[in-house]
Image 1 (cartoon, rainbow, N blue to C red):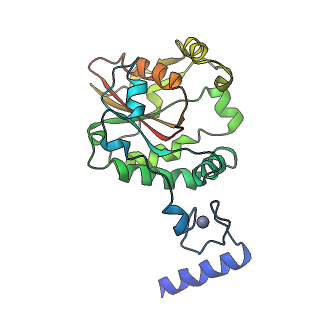
Image 2: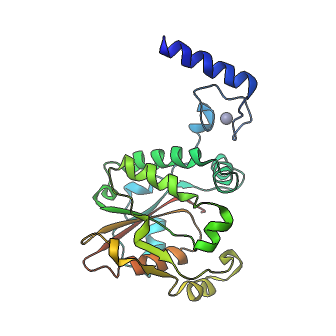
Image 3: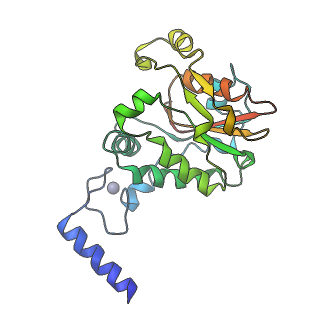
Length: 232
Ligand SMILES: [Zn+2]
């Protein structure tokens, strides 16, 4: 009885408020979210989580002592993933973050990333967060942490420097700009943590490395990094 009511309600909703796939624009069935099942199978996984010396690890470990680092997806221009991230960032479609978080978490199960003990999102400066209304990675991180049965501890670190639009600067400028941009909130730091630092899309990695250096100031800590996407 309950199932048929749910089905009836889903059909009614999609009749009055049809939803469309951000990948192929076809109308979504009630159980399809946030993209149609066909487009979901085309998401470009990197499988870097199974390769220690992958390109993300090579890039980030040059300047920061790391246990592991990877991106879950290739982030390509005009792709389904790009459209999903746009909807999440600028249209506040937070359920997309949750869905991507579960997907990413499932990829990291039974990999070395399961050894991490506390998940931290790359913090936005409070001013930037006020402008945007929320940190788009929070729900992604919450779902990722829940899938990995790991505590999510976003309050252990804060951003104290509001940097300029970093994409406009050179790599050297970005490293200089990010110096001393973060500060630990020592009252809530767990004992000897293995941090899993999480961000959406990696570009130069300067922000992640700066944040990582600050996290590693915690005595006895280790650091791994994962991002949702990377441009190759
Ligand atoms: Zn589709």
